[in-house]
Image 1 (cartoon, rainbow, N blue to C red):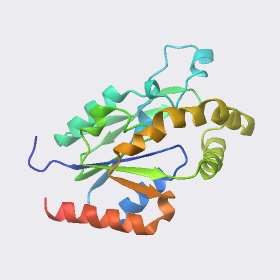
Image 2: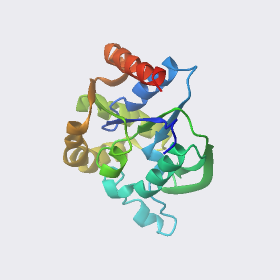
Image 3: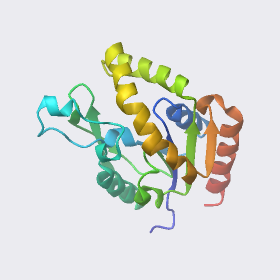
Image 4: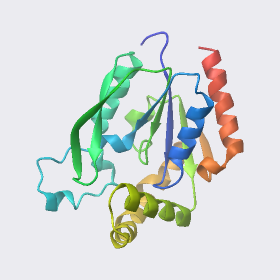
Length: 209
């Protein structure tokens, strides 16, 4: 491992919990620092060999939906200060896009995703683990807005998916991983006190590198 190993921070929580708000707020606080965000959502498995009917049945809230092997491989490369080509997922086609994003290594890497604490291999790479804990009614409203506006979904399809898949998967796989967190932030990006404390901790770590 290089002496200047990046700090890796995991930010987990349910869909619509405010993970991205927390991550963006932290990134804004350290605009003069070197911070990279690695979203687990970019690492859904490639489904290009499957017919569309089968792709539509994919449970995106299940651990098996993610290509954690590739995510771990990329994080290890970034730890070694090597650049990577981050995949891009096409939510309308329900498979990985042929586009990639070239990513350069940074001093702080924030790994964000609903199930990043479900895989012990991912947790082993993290220096700090944060769980964003938000009430279910707020999370469903945020998911409705996001999936309709950004992912071309209909209202009925989002509600149906939430009832049949998202909620049970949250209770089975996501909520239990809260116990692995070093820090739990209620109400996500609205909790400025918790974010201030987190930013102070990151600043302390950076200044002692």
